[in-house]
Length: 124
Image 1 (cartoon, rainbow, N blue to C red):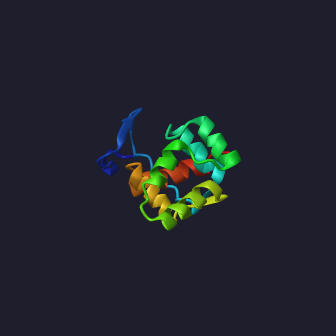
Image 2 (cartoon, rainbow, N blue to C red; image 1 turned 60 degrees about the vertical axis):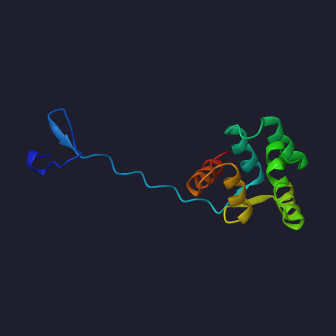
Image 3 (spheres, rainbow, N blue to C red; image 1 turned 90 degrees about the horizontal axis):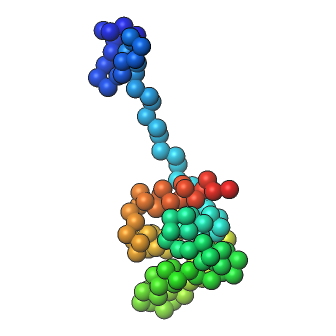
């Protein structure tokens, strides 16, 4: 690369200017993740225990932290819907309003939830 072609932000290695690496584009947020991926990523992030994650997947038992969050819902019908979702869903849709509720109660931003979904989606 010619010196007069170099731009701000370029590096200099081995007597030559080199352009910076291409920016990493964000990975699309998957629309849904599996039940196992959801509870596994929560355990990986230590939001629930590994034992709770396994019990949630195998028996549909809500982890204590999730149960406490759902218990804070004042409307009985909405609380019941949330319990049904978290205990029985085979997949979790990122667009579901209860996901945003869960995130808000955990102090997570939309960006945080999107990353949680990305992280969960790559778990094999």
